[in-house]
Image (tube, rainbow over all chains, first blue to last red):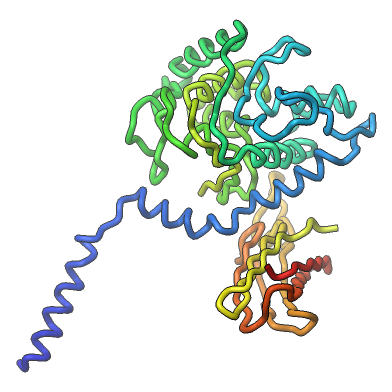
Length: 267
Length: 103
């Protein structure tokens, strides 16, 4: 065997050995895939549509949503998302973004909020809500979560959310905490954020709404929670129900200081 | 009327990098609905791009392209201020044209 051939042989042997050394973790692989997709996040299409819906006169009352109060005064969109859910004195309820939008769509545009809440995800006016949450959350991209907790109702919602988070039930005896109560857990390749604390910038609560590549839809927090309950084999929670708002309050308050990356991109 | 595309066109090292997001269902024609009926194919078939009115890019697409597709390509030459226009046509005859100015 010549010297060159020997050198080639050992080089080949080194290459064969290489993949084992450079083996990527599942998280690295997923991060790489996300980076490849990140440039063309279709959530942008929903943002553009949402902005138009916000400004367009629609509904039986032929009004726009430009006077909708998301917590920072009528019509103020920027920074509103990272302070929701919060207490609203006009409705006397703690509301998340989606339930607040329902209130505005009913009060200002004349839509039937109950009918929209009962509509399946991705259908009818639910599609408008998807676009609106994309637009409104995008206006707070890069800002830090800072949910108010001064009102007694807000504190009660947090406490109720914590109870729900740890409440085990259903045929699998599951709670949210079963998957999200410990660090370093995952389902298949998906890292599961630990939601009893701040899981970090742009992770967990700070990364929804998001475009789901697998379903080709934009998911708001309501749909995310709905699917969590489906995976636990619980009955579905009502759209914009107090239970979902309590959980959002719990996660949101825990995420205080986390930078919002919404609307993000998910597998 | 189809929803508008999002087009970003940027001059880079004497070329233009174009990134396009299109909103389209891109139904393959292989899926069935809840009643077991086949959902008819509905997808983009042709994509063309022009630079200041001159054709620079064309593609024929089929059902394998994802929903809400993202397309990125580079045009040789060109400069900031040029106009890039993208058009798609789907198999139902719908079409959409959008234009962007190179930044």
